[in-house]
Image (cartoon, rainbow, N blue to C red; front, side, top):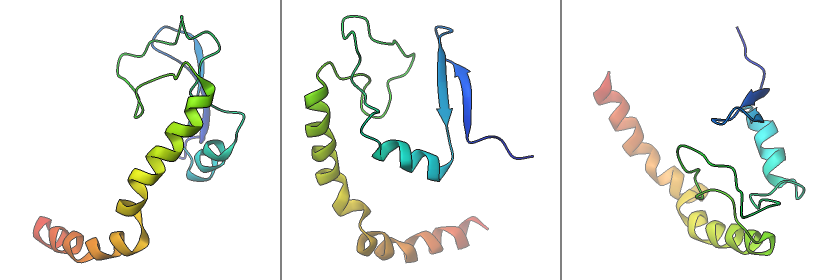
Amino acid sequence: MTHPTIQRVSDTQGRPAWLVSGHEQVRDLLADPRLSRSHPDPRHPVRLTQPGLFGGPIPDPQAEQADLHRMRRLLTPSLSPRRTDSLRPRRDDRRRVAR
């Protein structure tokens, strides 16, 4: 059974939210400038039981772009094709051991 990649769900407070899990849909959403982590009312942000990857809403939408570029600069070297290819033998060794 396949699950829809976009589902209407509720957050921990019971408010409506969207859960997007398909690779293509997530990639498209992350590239869409209409979506952001900034909150329209920073004094009353959504409260999560566990912080997200980036620690929740950003009060300043302008700071969001700067944060995005900072994270890309930090992560790009570790996730480059050359770097991930260099890890392949180690991953394959671990798979053989796990069998």
